[in-house]
Length: 446
Image (cartoon, rainbow, N blue to C red; front, top):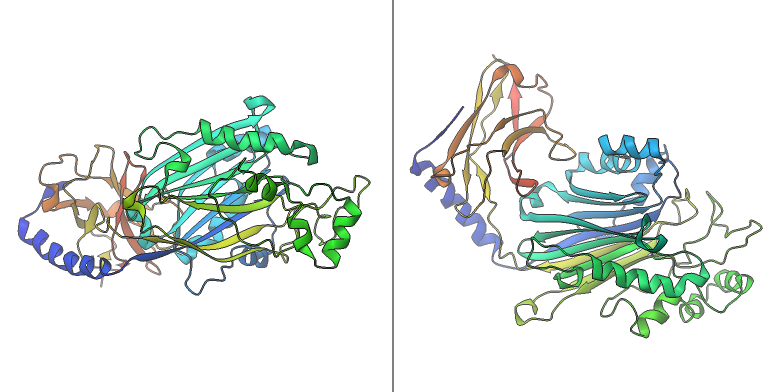
């Protein structure tokens, strides 16, 4: 099934790779991140495809390298939750159906009852997203229930460390102090034992999004609506509980946020831009927020930089009683980690009815496992488990940097010749793809 090949082929591969790395290493890389938060009020996704396109539309000149999407109040009824442990929940499926054909891979997700956080990465960056770990904190009912809380995904990106948090904090106007406590509890509770960056705030970059539930203090509901109608939003910012708590140093110290130039995102009558007209007449508020932090505490981190290109609500996405909010961010990485752990040799077309092989090279410092595998994917695949077929990777770590050969038996190969394919090396230790081949085709025999 596999064997080790000679060093000369590896030397040719290294020469090409060194030229590519020299080009990559000549300047820092700006990674475009599209971050989005949306409380979807336990609803199913819309059937209108225009809505998902409007939701995920970035305003950056370059297409995003990374999408991170936090949802709150995803339906967590027992029969829904059981279904979603086996399959993607309907909202994750809805988002992946839009982004997968554009070349984005869902590299990780985490769910805590109604909280869902997704991380989708452009295929060419996937081998450089490593050491992915997740965590969660319950804050509902004094920490016993997950209807409120926070979920996080941390990962390494070209040598920089990134942590993304999606949270749903205590509700209602009078829950201000509890929201501050929830934030502190999430910070204190979440640790990543297997990483050099143990806590959320230890990471080079932190992106914090969610339904933070902070409201507008002091002003009456009718006064808030009148100010919104006059488009004098600056008046409301001075009464925003999050801004007040942040200025007092109670929460989000050293975090940044874009200007609140968009109207409050909660609470709307479903499917409209009309603020709550029910008997409760709940006060509008900027519940849905995105903040970020750059950790420059050490000399080695002085190069870190993050810029905000846009921060806005999606006022055409009228579905929930919340408007979605998104931010276009750009973070800088120095590309100290530019070699994929696994490289594939140039792929010639495969032929239906014939056994086919691939040759790959494993970097000498890469940890491997007997449970690693090489998978065949159609271009547009959604996640590492969305393969056509697979074979086990080479089990013996000795001399793997000199090249390994694995064979795919013809019986298991797909018959679809209308699309392109790639191979990917999946690490069971890192739970991620460590290398992806160039695209190739499977052809009919002549």
